Amino acid sequence: MRPERLSDIIGSVYDCVLQPQEWSRTLPLISAFGESAASSMVVQGRLSSSGATVFEDGDRQSFLRLYFEKLAASRMPAMKQVAFEHLGEVATMTMLAGEREPLNSDFYLKWVRPLGFRDVIGVLVLKSGKRVAWFSVARSDVQSRFTDNDLRQMELLSPHICRALLISDALDLQSIAAVRLAETVDHLSTGVLLTEEDGRISYMNGSAEAILKEGNALRSRNGRLVAVRPHARDALSRALQESSAGRAPSISGQHAIPLPDEEGSGLIANVLPLEWRDGRNPLATLPGAAAVIIQDPAEGAPPPMEAIGLLYGLTAAERNVLEQVAASHTPQETADRLGVSVNTVKTHLQKVFAKTGTARQADLVRLVARSTAPLKSGR
Image (tube, rainbow, N blue to C red; front, side, top):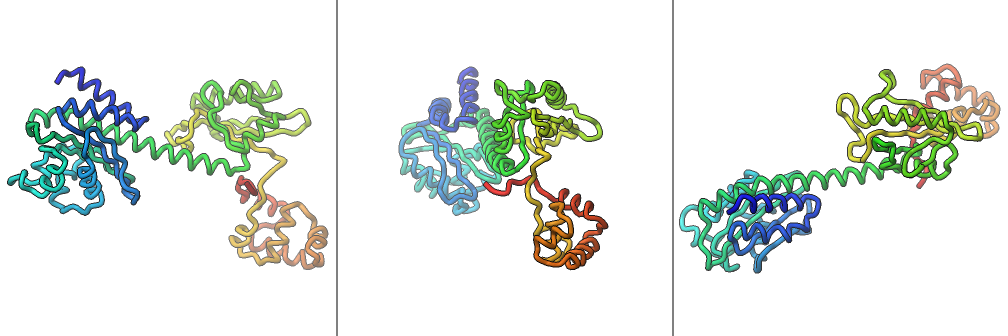
């Protein structure tokens, strides 16, 4: 076997990482490499009852596929699974069927010979928390059995097949994590954007998209994030460059940029690096070099009054009073809104002070504000 041919096959194996359908093109190359009549890749989900994903080269492999599916479901005798306990270990038919008279074994008689095969090589190429996978090559009954040299050739190839399956499995998990994270971030009332090193937007949630659509203080220009006012534009650009380089103010760890609009109000942008000093990156599954968190001081999500009431052991009446006070209503306004006397409101208020460890209405407002999660009130 020429080294350049093995190199071509290895390259084709790694092409299957991002495009699993490429196995249909790669398996014939592997069959020819091992002078085999057929080859197959069987990927079985550990938690799925929907069967296996199978890529095949050659005819009449249904019985062999069933064998590996049964092996994945652990319905085969333990002695037949011993060869598949170690990832990447090449197992011959003798190892699968037993040293004594392999051609008279049940494995050969029930699984190999009915297909017109004479010999089989199998490799466990993936064993993760989500799925397992087996690779096999087979020779027909008109071919000779696999030799030690054939096994050595397959041992050169099997580590690359294992690595390709492992990378593919990890990328699939990462894609799932990215989708779930994106769905979660999209529920925030706070705008969240991720930018590349050149300031180009690589991701934004629904709230950020709405902010850019309004365009009063922040816009997208040629795919890049820019502030409307010149002074804010320069400050935001510097913050994005610093964050993309992994730098941020030492005390806060983020750049706070005011983004005024033309009407005298505006937004606040908090810009921080995605690659932190200790290597942690909570948004690692989403693309970008810097994160931009956009807040509108004039708007906010409703406070979780029920959770606050349960946390501090407030009665329903006390919670109603707290909700009015947190909205900056006076005791008289609260009494009018709730249809009770001012004295009743003051009595409830004193109990709320005692239970929450506060002394003034301003303290209660701050307590509720700190408890508010940046979530949308509705979809």
